[in-house]
Image (cartoon, protein in one colour):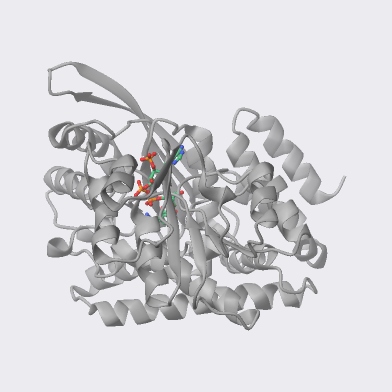
Length: 447
Ligand SMILES: NC(=O)C1=CN([C@@H]2O[C@H](COP(=O)(O)OP(=O)(O)OC[C@H]3O[C@@H](n4cnc5c(N)ncnc54)[C@H](OP(=O)(O)O)[C@@H]3O)[C@@H](O)[C@H]2O)C=CC1
Ligand SMILES: O=C(O)CCC(=O)C(=O)O
């Protein structure tokens, strides 16, 4: 049996209850086939076995008290995958669907994504099955404090640096940092990124993932002598990433016509292009009672309960909500409507069947680990600013982010071309991310 197949079989056997993790590993390993063929020595070094097994997976209880005095217990996770090229780095997801397999898939993806940024950050992810929706500010604070009361012993500015993800924004990071500082008795603000500005947050971090995805998309469009001008975009989610996409797409002359949540999607044929509309996304994200339906009512557009926006007739799709939100049926709808580009803002939003169908039918897909790497890239820039005890201007950070996204696109293209794969952004991103991590692993000896 071929090396890759043997490793994959082993991953499937050992992690049978973790379908998302298996899906992420399968995609990466399949991409690496030409690299493994060119480097038979990797088998003896067990490079793939060492990559698919996290350095450690920490699971802990998170007890917290609600406003009525009742105690609840959630499960917390931190999976530290690889610190070959820098401290472990990756977000914290707070969502009821969180389990070990989901955190492992996200942490595994993070190894290659972080490598692509060219910055010195390893791969990790964490979170909890706590649902912030419907909770008061005080309940969220008590949860975050309890979560950090265990997490603090596993992290540090040179050890592991968590950040936001679904359900974790600047407010949650602030509560967690306060607790970390209290326990450690040290300022150490480089221990978390995505902090609010007054104590070491970086300008452009909130915008970074969405801006980065649009910058990356611009490189893809340029490859086809195309541009954003006049394009319509179907976007999912209404959170941090979707908000950044709306802002930057407007600047480039494109318009986002949909946003979505778990209860359905809004179709705004005029485009989410005014400051009032874009700011309203922040209100939905930050409030417990403002909902997508309210957007539709306020701005006089359609709300489609229980549906996804992938049947809309648009030019581009930016999935910015969650994993596997575009399946085969949705890919067929996109192709039938003439959508040529999917740029993944969310992590692993497109299923393997959907990707295969979309590509076979002439579409181009910018994979998550490349397209949404802008968020973690600016997190690494936040770490750099914290170390220097200095802040760059918004223009400086934005320029660095832009250059990093161009570089991610170009290094993916180059890596695919090196192995005769043509313009293959998925395989190219996996190979480019892998090559740097493996070089570091080999030079550091077996561990
Ligand atoms: N924030 C960042 O810097 C980065 C984020 N990402 C990825 O981008 C995606 C969005 O993250 P972000 O914007 O930060 O998160 P937010 O919490 O700000 O927003 C999440 C959005 O996704 C929707 N969503 C979440 N789960 C589901 C679900 N099961 N079904 C339908 N909709 C869902 C939410 O709607 P509702 O509230 O109704 O569930 C909300 O609109 C995630 O995949 C994340 O991993 C990737 C790189 C960096
Ligand atoms: O900024 C970070 O460290 C994490 C971003 C993240 O969670 C992601 O890239 O998926």
